[in-house]
Length: 243
Image (tube, rainbow, N blue to C red):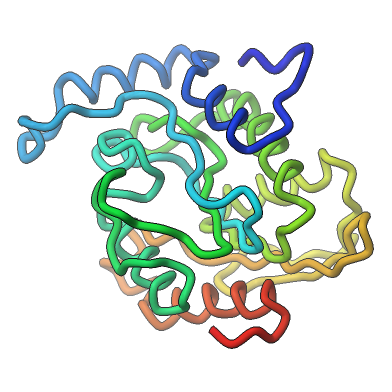
């Protein structure tokens, strides 16, 4: 991964190093293959085909953690949760909560902007069948550790999309030396807990079902459910600031 020696301590440096990462051979092979074979409807587009870094300001108050880039979404566009159905759901909820400039995110040049919010993921390369293996998750966890640490001074709420992100978020917080409650809820939509950070500030960790088609098409996750957790994360982070 290239994290040995001097570690990057700013979001911009972390992003630059993530994009160059080649630590997981299976993921490198898959993301590059997809970028060449492409989906028929995107045959005329040039795919990103590299690791996808986070998106949002370096002083974010809300950090959203997803699973991994979509093969024909972020792996195509180069921006996390951009260019697929999952992204449409997430950015619409962010827009409705006053955390995004636009309702949709289609490309890196569409003018989208996040307000006090950053989106990242537990694994930064598109995995086959959207299923990174244990070793790949562990390898990529170092990036999440660095990102959460770099953002810690300003972040007040963490929104984990899916069970893997729920686990990864807590693992990263523990890895950077934060103390979490011994009794923490199991993952479910809306599960949450608070903890006092090493700087004395109270923070919120909240879970949500991932806005994947598997969840949205079946009705497991509704728009109102996603709106609710996004607004809760935003309101807590802004400590009463109207959204």
